[in-house]
View 1 (cartoon, rainbow, N blue to C red):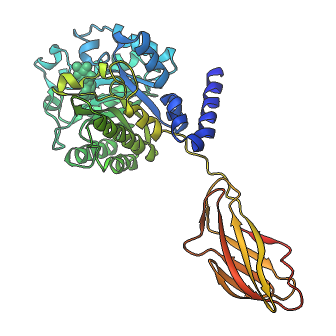
View 2 (view 1 turned 180 degrees about the vertical axis):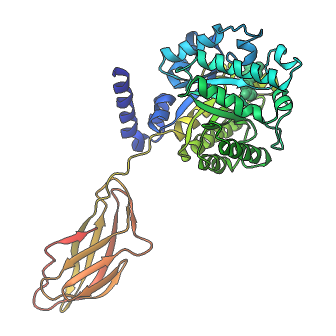
View 3 (view 1 turned 120 degrees about the vertical axis):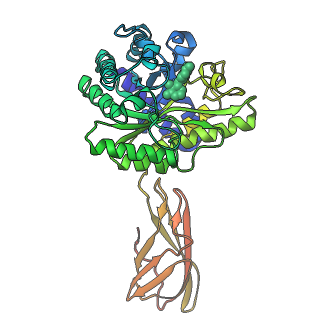
Length: 446
Ligand code: XIL
């Protein structure tokens, strides 16, 4: 309860100062609180052995979900058939629990980081299927109720969208995917079960392959709850179709998530590259926010000192939101700014004042000022009044004015309908009068 209250207070403070100080407030609020307020989680991959000191402090303070970078992979947990080693995975699960974080389980069935007894074994289809489902059942059961998302199958596709001929694909065909999902569902019915891949982020052959695969699996009743998009991106190359792609998957009836975001650049990093990276991180965050079924976003390591990129892409790096000294980079601000609280649309207010500018025998010039007294923009206005002494409008400017008997109505024109909070619009008119020229008793404005 105390924690919730603190969060709410911090968010209120952030929301209150958002208009005045722009993104400064967002920068001071932990990313996890900003994300929660916008209805998504913000996760990071972590290395269990590093979860002490400042690394642990930042991981806990800024993220509300963690993914073991390696500790839950088959090669880590079942190096020898039937002999499980949970130490590394448990450490991260315990850390997540201690800090109120969700835990993404990564990953049950994948062609890489397999123990060699699986990868290099000679398998009949039945034997491999049993080994695979035993592995899935044992691991999902172990973390039942603690893992909220499982990457059940990772990287099932080739670049052209066809089924990857991994030991699983080659031995079992596509059927291994359904079997893995069913085993996971049976072991923990509450966990959300994901298919995960890379280079499926934008529209294209590979994501088309993923789309039709998910369609087939759902048609077969396979319990696929979500699709993960790794988003290992190259600087300046966020796919322009990312949001549309996320949306078409969510329209199939599954959740989507960004699961391994990083944005790599050719080293050395420069100010210009880091500025581009900030825009890239913000663009991916906004794409997730724009799609209702996007559950959240995970960065693949939060600090450049804990990124796989330099090892796998020689000459590339600086791919994460924090530098090697754990200082936030512009990319951090890019995420924070994209997650900034949306100012709640307050009511638009409208008040009108009437003045006679000049008057001569039989005629006068009047002016009405329309003021927005609310906190949201006025997107159109109409002012009405009754003339008490037979005055008649003969000509008007900056509004469309009509008069029927004593009733006058003035409506905005195309160029002055929008009035920002605290702003005003003015229109004028000429009119005739006889006897006396008293002002209207009241003006209504809507
Ligand atoms: C990477 C880890 O970050 C490295 O530490 C490891 O050496 C190799 O794997 N796609 C995935 C992740 O699904 O599991 C990979 O993680 C990065 C690419």
